Amino acid sequence: MSAKILPGLKMAPSPVLKCCKRALNWVPVLFINLVVGWSYYAYVVELCVYTIPNNAERISYLVIFHIFLIMFIWSYWKTIWSRPASPSKAFVLPRIEKEMFEREERAEIQQEILKKVARNLPVYTRTAGGAIRYCDPCQIIKPDRCHHCSTCETCVLKMDHHCPWVNNCVGFSNYKYFVLFLAYAALYCAVICATVTQYFIKFWTKQLPDTHAKFHILFLFFVAALFFISVLSLLSYHLWLVGKNRTTIEAFRAPVFTNGPDKNGFSLGFSRNVSEVFGDQAKYFFFPVFSSLGDGHSFVTRLVHIDPEQANSVLQQNGKSPADGETSPCVLGNSIQHTEDNNKEITDRGHVVSVTMESEP
Image 1 (spheres, rainbow, N blue to C red):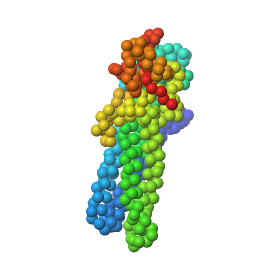
Image 2 (image 1 turned 45 degrees about the horizontal axis):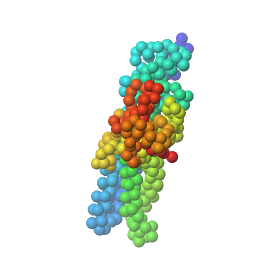
Image 3 (image 1 turned 90 degrees about the vertical axis):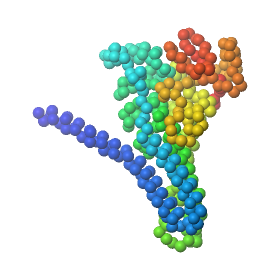
Image 4 (image 1 turned 120 degrees about the vertical axis):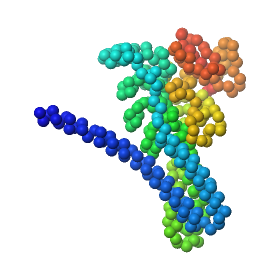
């Protein structure tokens, strides 16, 4: 009888451990908020109220400081509280196919079932072995650029990475907010460093008397400079990713298409890559409001490796001559056309193919 009780006792702490883990996940977020809270006190009270003697300088510093602080906090909390976008029910196996898939033990037959379902979905990427990407925990066919997050315990559309500093997955629903959070965090630190420097020097060279503000101002400068360097390097990397239309995952492991891996498979040219994240309306670029293009389930791809001259001749044969510098994103589809309206398509053995009019290094 005791042997039957022991297994139950082992499983009992599981919900408690999960709660503890979830609570610990908020520690980095709490740390960031405490640092920002202290920096606010040090800057507003110790620097502007107690140290700066000139009212005009004090007011101008406070106005600039609060503008960047508001944008920083706004972007940060939008990144935290934006729920990761998950695949729609269209990517769930239909009931009959699901029953067949679960009963089948042979992997090759399971793949045939998945391929049959995937024919009606805009799915163009594969596993490294060329198989349909299927998530066992979520029991769905993964859309392109979608990955399962073990921390969030769900599949995330266009997943970039799971960030402990926001305790959230960064993906399709909040990647723009994340990039803006990094940008405004760097600007927030830069403003602090630029405005504190002269008083930092005065305290360091003892041109100002030792007061309770000295420690806060000296420490504020060092902390802001340290965070500025680290955040700027991370921001630079993600801006590079935006320009290449890659996620962090794709930067380390190129997406695999039916014709093999292609690190530039989703790249449409710099301006269009930026538009995918920030949208096509410039008035929304610098605000943490959702303006990214698409639905996160399907993406225009460039799957045909062809040089621009050859692409020109192909398009001309089909009645279209692209203008100089024009890019025509390409896709490869089975039964769904996965192209933009202005693309010219080429039929090849029952597949729909469009050609990208650009070359990437």
